[in-house]
Image (tube, helix red, strand yellow):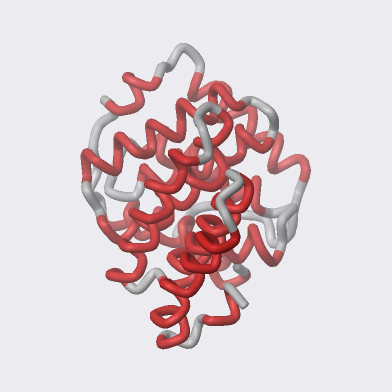
Length: 219
């Protein structure tokens, strides 16, 4: 995370070293302004950019999400809102779907499930538009674990989690892929599936996970 923050500042994106409430609220107000009178359709129709400098910044912002979410949760909203504002300002790209997936997570966690679900679907729509497969695992994982269940039955999450696992396994996004399996097993338990079914699911995925030295995620 520290390296990402340094890189962003070097590329002209001002970021605080630590959580800064004033910085966060400034970004939050900017997001309100950028989203004012915008609907989902208008966001999908934003200009498409392939500027190398812009794409480099977008990649670094994505790489900062997981370490901030796990290692510095207070900083995570800053990354999430900065990522949102960046894409609303610079236009859509192969990385935009991730920004809106993260924003859907933030909205849902703050209690705005309807808007969160809308932005979650926006992220899926933009993924289908650009088909950048290296992001599929992350996007489907976020939607399948933290967004979709507020509006639909848990069983519908299984599709997104299986897609996340299959994609991550193919592209090497192993942490997100194997966390998808954890949530598939948890969903199965909460849906009332038999222990036999749950154990069978666990066993069917254990071998490939162990082969990649990632067995700690489900043990």
